[in-house]
Structures are given as structure tokens and as C-alpha cells.
Length: 481
Ligand SMILES: Nc1ncnc2c1ncn2[C@@H]1O[C@H](COP(=O)(O)OP(=O)(O)OP(=O)(O)O)[C@@H](O)[C@H]1O
Image 1: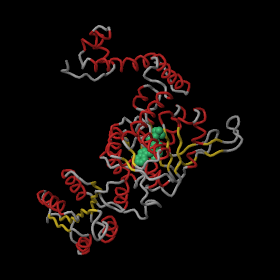
Image 2 (image 1 turned 90 degrees about the vertical axis):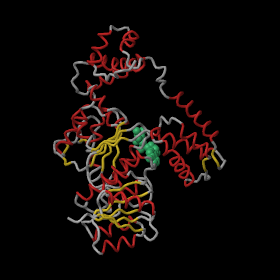
Image 3 (image 1 turned 180 degrees about the horizontal axis):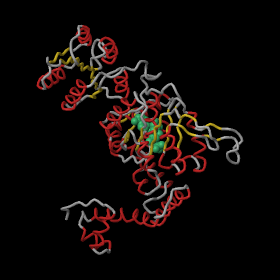
């Protein structure tokens, strides 16, 4: 069999050389060109089994070439490489029919793996039509590796209706991801309906989601459609899913299993035609262990998990985000501003417990309040100190909150769950385990795994501690002193 031939188009000579050598060594035949026009000529002549193309080339944009290649040679697989690294590039490449999108700089091993996969898989189906009205509006900012992975998952999900679970701390952009999945997905022509479980009184959630019939309960004077019905043909975003009461969980599970639902007080089943994206900042596994979230529902929702990293795990995105928010404020009528180098450094070293939302608020405040054109590190420092003082004033002071208060809050949750209909026979054991696990885990961490010291600190017998470690399935770090 002849060796597969790979056509490479990139205006950067060093990339052509690197690819040519690596692909050649891997046993492929390689032809390289700096221009889109030569690549197109080869494609038209029937050359090649796989195309690797850059996006920005002197004569034509590689992304514009993708649909033309797909029309002329539907069997030819295309890999798009780009230094632009935005969600739009990933989405466009995928929607125009590229096999894979690889951000630059790339890892050669990864590229070779993608080439192997591409040659072994049939070419993907092309999606006609442009993804969104405002093509160039950038919904998600950030070029960190973590965000690149998220863009790729979003791009792949634009061609399916799979249920997605977005997990991340507050303010990391969970709703923005849900919107991007909708705006670039197959259901973009339908509505996007968002419901926040934490913002609706528990007793109203079922009627809010599924609607109710006239007379279903006191005050129900009309038939009212629920969010499921409103989202027909589109996407239903269930935010803070971890706060969903037990009965609504059971009902939602039934909808996911059977594809239909009934309104509160209604009998006639209604077909559910929605794509579900759920989000939470909670650790749902812990909620399952605590008995407040249904495990079977979790698996139905967690078909494709997306974990949004907190801002402190992708500090390299901070300068871009900060400038983006300043620019947006300028569009809103504030004087244009730029950041000094030490301002950027200060922003990058901050902790950002409120993640992107906190950074956005800070930049908006600065844009509105300060006349100077250049924002200095000193100013940032001052603003950060002020917002920290604000936070400690308004937030519950977890640092000084009596342990009993925190425990009471959790017990209230268990009791609410049992009122919601989840059978609970072991609250005593569950609550003790919830307290014991972190207590033992943290004492072990403090003694660097030394069980003798930990037992003495806890005032427990060594064997008792060992048994508890086993029963509570606490991972043990061996060899630590
Ligand atoms: N990657 C990003 N690029 C641009 N803006 C972002 C990004 N991530 C978040 N934001 C902005 O930060 C704010 C918070 O985002 P979003 O509401 O999506 O977060 P969330 O995780 O859903 O928060 P919560 O859990 O508190 O509801 C929004 O104004 C959003 O526009």
C-alpha cells in the first residue's frame, strides 16, 4: 500500500520544517507549502490523504478553505492549526468540517496522535450554516491550556445534543459556557432558558420547571407552562443543580429516562424536546454521599462533564481578561484605559475567590471611578484591599463562625432532604462521618501522615484511629514521618 501523503500549509517556515521532519520520520509522505492557493491546487488535483493547515496565511484564511476542500474532496480529513487559540477558531474549524483543531504551540506527539486518528477515521459530516449572528463576538476570553481544552470540548459538542454538566466555582463562567454550547450548537435557532435552583423557593421549583394546571394548588388560577415547555426546541440551563429538592430530582430523572413530563396537577404527558446543560459549584459526589443528591440523576446529567478551572489556576488569562473588561467599559462610554506592567503583575498575583466575576467587577469599577489613563499597580493594590475589606464585612465570617453553626446549617439540609421525601434512617452516622472525615484527614495532613502523632493530637487510641481511617476510606500517605 502506498504511504499516506500529508499536505501541510503554513506560512511559517520553521513549522513546515518541524512537521516535515516529524511526519517523515513517522513514515508519511509530506508536501509543504506556505500558501493556501498551492494547497488548494494540490487538493483539486486529487493529491494527499490528509491536510494540515494553518489559519492565517498571506493569500487566504485556512478556515475559509476548509468548506471548499470538504465540498471538493469529502473524504479528505483536515486538521486546522492556529495560534489564535480562541473559542471561535475551535468552533469554526469543527463546524466547517475539520477533523480536529490544534492550538499552537502544539506538542508534536499529540499532533502525530491526531494524524494517526484522522487517517483511521472517516471524515466528519459538515454542518451547513454559520454558527451565530455575531460571528466575531468573543463569548469566552482566555488562551490558557485549560481554556483551550474547554473550547475543544465545546466545539465537539456543537454537533450533538448530549447532556452536559459544568462544574466550577462561582464566577468561573459556567453560564457563559452553557450559552456558548447553545449559541454554536444545533439548537441555536431555539430558545435558551436558564433556571437557577438556588434562586427559587423549594416548594415552587417543580411548578417552575414543569408548569402547572389550573387549580393544581391554591393560587394556581391559570394553566402556566414551565421552563421545560418554554425551552422546547432549545436548551434548558439548570444552574445550581445541587440545590434541587428531592421531589424535583425524581421528576427530572423521570423526564431524562422517558423523554416526557407532566405538569403539576396534569395527566397528559408532554414530550420533552430540550437539550439540558446543568451546572453546579458543589461537589455532587459529596452531596450523593450525604444523601441529598440522587446518584442515578447524577449519572444521567454527567454525560459530558466540563470542569471550569478557578481563575487562580489560569493566571495567564488574567491580563487578557482584565484588558477585555476595560475595553468593554470603554465601549460603554468610559474613557479608554490601559494597565501598567506592575498593575498586570499585581492582578496576576491576587487570589480571586470570586473568579472572573470579581475581576470583571474590579475592572468596571476602576474604569468608572478613576480619571487617569494608565492604571498602576498601586491603584490595583488599593482597590483589591478595599474589596477584601468589603467582602469580610458582608460575607458570613467562615473563619470565626462557631463550628456548631456550620454543623447546624448542614443538619438543616439533611432534615430538609428527609422532608422532601428522601428516606433517611442514618442521619446520626452520616453527620458524624461528615465531621470525622475532615477532622482525621486534616490532622493526618498536619502530622504529615504520622498516625502516632495524629492519634495523640486527637486524643484517640492508635488502633481506634486506624479503624476509623479504614472505615471512612481516608487515603493514607505512606512513608511520611
Ligand atoms: N472566560 C470568560 N471570558 C469572559 N468573561 C467571562 C469569562 N468567564 C466568566 N466571565 C464573566 O464573568 C461573569 C460570571 O460568569 P458566569 O455568570 O458565567 O459564572 P458562573 O460560573 O455561572 O457563576 P455562578 O456560579 O456564580 O452563577 C459574567 O459576567 C461573565 O460574562
